[in-house]
Length: 224
Image 1 (cartoon, helix red, strand yellow):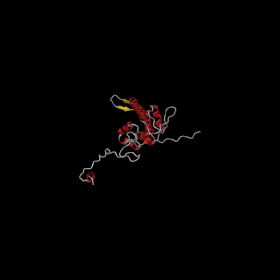
Image 2 (image 1 turned 45 degrees about the horizontal axis):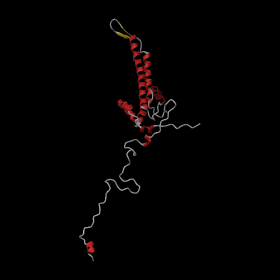
Image 3 (image 1 turned 90 degrees about the vertical axis):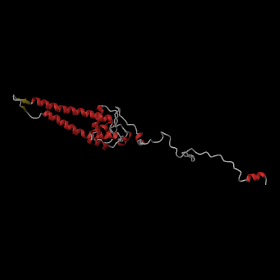
Image 4 (image 1 turned 90 degrees about the horizontal axis):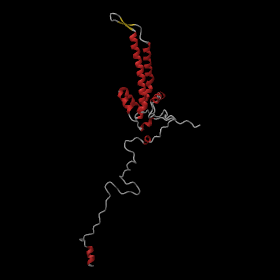
């Protein structure tokens, strides 16, 4: 046995050290085949953000309009004018499905306030006119009334009551649809009966794409 062989078999001879293996960065593993590396998330902007509405509400089809720019009755009318909102209120008298935009809601309440103010003011004015002409004061300062309650005042009081009855159901339906447009269930509008300020809050809420779930589009008619 030569000295070289004895040198190779000497157990005390230090062995050459292997270079340390390079580890993967913490949290990143070796890809398996062609798969996405484990622990690596989708690039930002390609996944559904947390808390966002469902995709079918985000990518809803555009609302059709007629030649005048008015949408169908099942759809909300964003940017409706005063007269448009007034007429649409009566056309959707008891329709609780669908949505109502803020312009539809507030233009109607302005119109309603005008009508109520006119009728109530006429009622008060007719009473004042009657009271001024139907009362006499004698020399002793005693005031007496001649004649009964004026018929004109009764007429305006009756008209005011009829207006309230005629607008109760469509006003309820309008508030119901306004809550739908904010993405909430219709019964939330009933809170406004207990707290009037809730109606103002609901009327100011912004539109939400999730409200499209309450729409009931009419099927298109047969092609002639």
